[in-house]
Image (cartoon, rainbow, N blue to C red; front, side):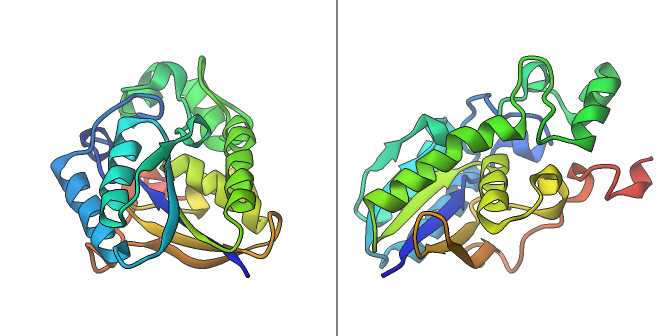
Length: 223
């Protein structure tokens, strides 16, 4: 039997709506984010979940709590699932970072997988701590269905590794809407199949367009 992982991004926050870097910043869900999470919980209420794991950051853990309650479970926190740390960029808008640290921002846009701002993490470090968590969950819950609530960059990096996508382009090539649902099936800890991606049908007709959050490589109008 395969093991099914419901990989979930946390719901919306005020900082995400303002396009601020909030990786390690511990912010709460907004009212809209709570609505999104409740809708997802209602969608998954009939699922036989063996467990619900979550990043310990409040926005992810609250999302997990709202989903877990609907499924009659208690969330289990794991620090390996936390979001990427943006170092000295934390709390700043994208425009502020570009203005204050232009060289650093340019290097990060070019290769966010191996480069990090001062005091922050490269994508490689995030993948190194998050993938072992997924592996452990798959081994521990073989043949079962498990929910895992994490963050936008962390999820995209994990998916890049599992699906063989060049992780250097994870920011432009993969998106994750607030409170979206991804479904992965594992034949074993190495072989994963993506069954559902970035689905928000529990609260919206389709994910919103990412707009200015993409790099200049994608959005030439920002040059």
